[in-house]
Image (cartoon, rainbow, N blue to C red):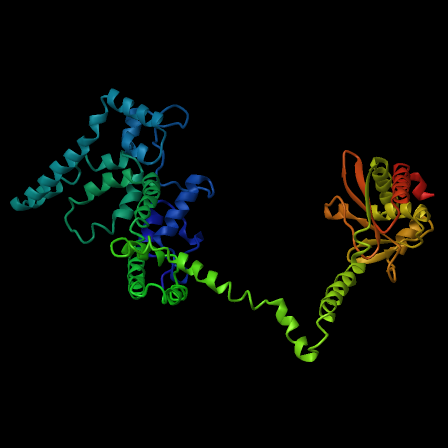
Length: 483
């Protein structure tokens, strides 16, 4: 299989592209026309270097600095329309058009075509006369050197147009192909490339969405049969009609068609408050169960047990049943409903100390540990002995030695229930957090350098207030926690 498609090869050679370096996207890596067009677009955008040998060479009389004259532009086969299609700025195209109209040399271009046509007519007429020596005379005609002097791209473009005139033996066809070839260079190919995206835009247009419309019509038609049997049965089947719409896959559209059909025929159904009789029915049903919760019925079973005198002990029986249930739950939540106090504390200095110690020890110092050490210093005010720190679903032991030893002791779990549990609610972005199993001291979020201390548990109010004041004073002088 050829590595490049024939049309792609013609397109590459016409534009002076070395297609051997292009990676093909066709079957088996074959290079197709789109690969050549993509390469040309990358050349125009600056992503690829232009070919070493440009197809459209500059006019021989142009030195590359001064603005080319209208004659040079005409010889190169450029005009305003071709430049605008190639994406050239409108100012340049206007300048080319002005110079083209101002210079008298513009009409000189069709002259060689007329001469060629005259010579061709002469050649056609001469074989009819059939003089052999006369046929040699038209050979050195002047039009032959003129195409040599004309712009050099002509010998390159006939190479691309050479396969086209092969099926047509008439020599008249190459002249129209020659002017079309210089007009369609690298710029015309890029202009066609830019015009291609406009075609697929019309493709997504023929994508209507009428599909849900026919689906909605049969769904509305199916429930129409359901309400018809429901209407003739006014009262009793209403209970049956309610479960029927429930199994339907689409409950929402059901009431819509029912309302549409009920307007002509079921108008009396709306004034008939079907729920009203249903509400009225439970009213007579309500009096029937009234004898059922008959608490005197409880007295009925003991009547067969003891008929003569146990009527007096009957009221005594319900009394012990109600009283023991309530007091059984009260002691379990007794600690949770204890004393609750709150107090603010200035913790700006505490946070500074925490940052300094964390940098010195190269280890994060928990804020709860500093609060726990402050509470440990004043736990005797509440008559408490053991203090622990809650965190990460564990209860940590709070050491009484140096701060470094206390940080090491955090790795040890506290066995049992401590007398005082310190909770860092700020770690959970809360103002306070307490647990019911023991007395808890919570430190909340910090705002403007102040944090909230809260105490909850079975403690005396006066001593609890004194304890909070002592802890707040220690936190405001954090150097005491390091000593």
